[in-house]
Image 1 (cartoon, rainbow, N blue to C red):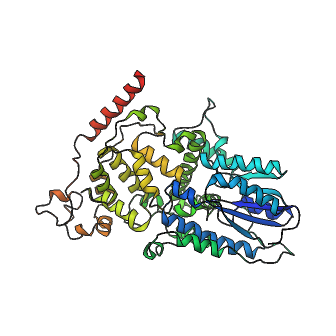
Image 2 (tube, rainbow, N blue to C red):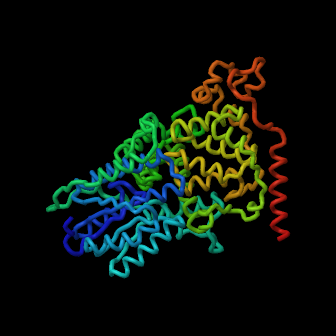
Image 3 (cartoon, helix red, strand yellow):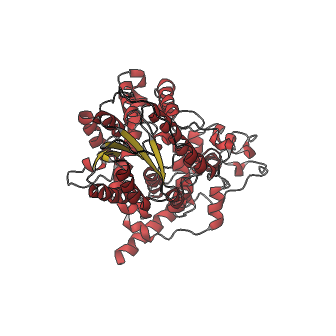
Length: 484
């Protein structure tokens, strides 16, 4: 393959697989020099971090669409099979030298392994005299910019949200112009189909699972527009009811970067001007703030990326090791209908409603008292939107080991959650067909029905006494730490 003319520039794609609202690409195209792009495919890294097959499929097919979109702009996308992050810096240096790259434009990432990869890659670039320019286009507010009055990172969401909003009000990102092929630049051919096809052949995924999703930037942007038109106004009222299509369904797109969080924010800000949409838009902006919050937590507390709890004393909790209970939870056989429906939704579709993620996680860690890390890993093995920062943050919040102003006293009752958020059992019946014919009176507590439900298990644990047992276990862990 012939080298690009001297002093080309490079866009390094990661979890920002789009051409619209892509700051690194925009800056590279404005540079004036020839532009190339690269993506380092790290399947061994996926293996070690339990990335779900459906997530891999989504990324690979989105990468294919990205390659074709860039080709129309005259920008070749090279997919380099690196295996793991450790191999990337050397390959990166070789790539820079091969194509006479003078400058690299790249989106910043904040997790521990990603930071190690990027620091080593920066060393390789510096050795070649290549400049690297980073962009924070994966978040709305970069993690390093906000701190408390004492100069510390925020660890409680509410004050973070206020500071986050204040910063955005005065520094919010301006919309980027749509990218067009530069005059004098011809379209090119995307050469990465074979690598993508080979990688997809290694992904064990049923066609019925992938058929429920659309990959790529175009589908993501279409979904954003559809959400704005049909569901944003009622988002605050409907988002907690799993039987209703009341959420944005953009979590996979945001985690892979096939849609820009800035584009989402611009849309929500516009909706604030309309009284009918204001309530929903404000609530949805809060969810974007949660996304940034967990990223800044990961950036400021890197030990969380290697399995450590945020609250140090919870390292001493004596979690249950009951494998039968864990398997019952994994398979949706706990005897608690909403928990079982949630687990089956995850396994069957690759996604779980956000309210149910909290219900299911809290049931595993509080009712079954099983280590949150086991549940965190199980979710990553199945989620199409498997985002490490959000998944870890959500699990630690539910387990009361993380950033939470109300430590271990928050315990959800799976029955009350079911009665409140699936009152007619519509969602339960969708995923737990054993209960399809049960009367509404018993749908949330089928063990109380006059006649046992054939094929559906009795509750694996009793609800009574959960709060007292959890409180005692957390208190004991704190005493152990204080005695050290």
